[in-house]
Image: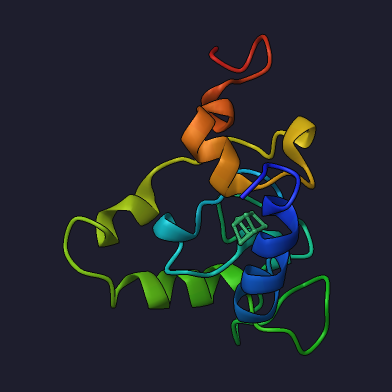
Length: 119
Ligand code: SF4
């Protein structure tokens, strides 16, 4: 499959299943298969300080906090995977937006960071 086709296939597969927004660097493995880009703040680490007492989102009324769902789902993962939830995920690299995370994983592009991110 050519790199040009991969984003189309990835969007078609992961969009309906995970609500994938094609950020280009997939972290589903560490979020209990919950896409963090569906958080209205697109936080890569959460929940934020605004989650309501009932677990609701402060931005979208009636929406359950994506990060609470991520935490709960991550508890069901096997040992070794479960612990990855606590790892600090880097912010979204906007240069990868719209590209295939599968391709970026294979090529290592998702491990390249903009200057200054290593600090
Ligand atoms: S983390 Fe990125 S690549 Fe993974 S499902 Fe969410 S938007 Fe798609």
